[in-house]
Length: 63
Image 1 (cartoon, rainbow, N blue to C red):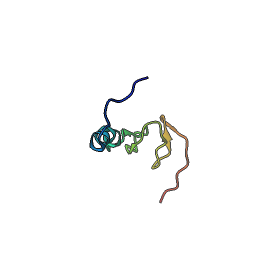
Image 2 (image 1 turned 120 degrees about the vertical axis):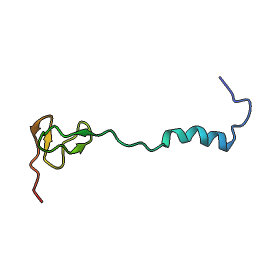
Image 3 (image 1 turned 30 degrees about the horizontal axis):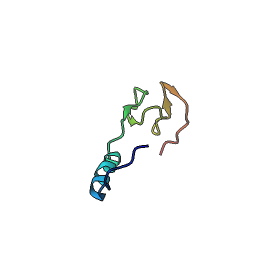
């Protein structure tokens, strides 16, 4: 079993761990409804018009 030769300093440990917590913008795609063209998360129903994959799947109240 591998054993560390020396203690890993807090700075080195934290530098290694910090790479996982970088903030990135989520990938967004255009709504499948040609009349809407709102940006939505992929594989999600559009909250503005209720379309998913080119079909109306959700009744959305007009505000």
